[in-house]
Image (tube, rainbow, N blue to C red; front, side, top):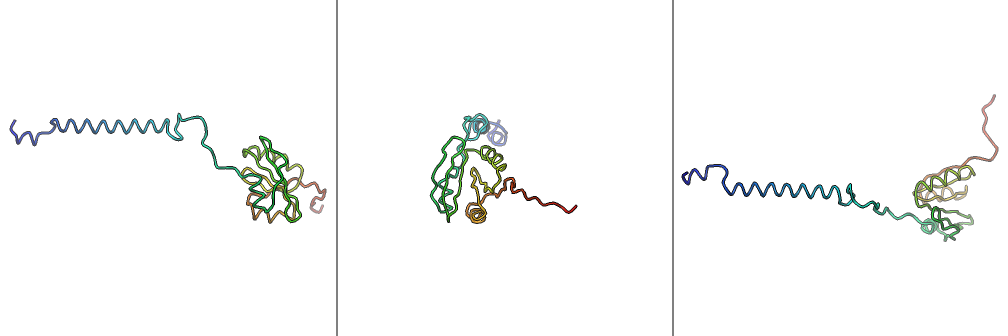
Length: 157
């Protein structure tokens, strides 16, 4: 083989080294991708502990937003509640560790009537005087309990 044929001819030791390095880099990237998929943050085989979620609103936070200071009346694993007074109205505030705990409490409370302002992990019991003001301050969803007044609307028969 002449020197000109060596330049034109495919292959050679340089091409073999380059191809080997390219394959090695591709395999390394593939392995790193699999490791990240399986064990990385949020990976398929990562730790069983869930990442901490956003901090829940506390009774004290809600009271502060309302403009009062809460006296804590219950501090249990499934509910934390307090009372405060604003503008002469007593306001009951409760927070829950999970949405399902809040929903279970709210489902039971509706049977007793009243109005409730329900937010992410919390409930505030409303009076007619505080309903609009607290909804404007705190957001959430207004819910009505069962009406026990005895007055029912009837269609004319």
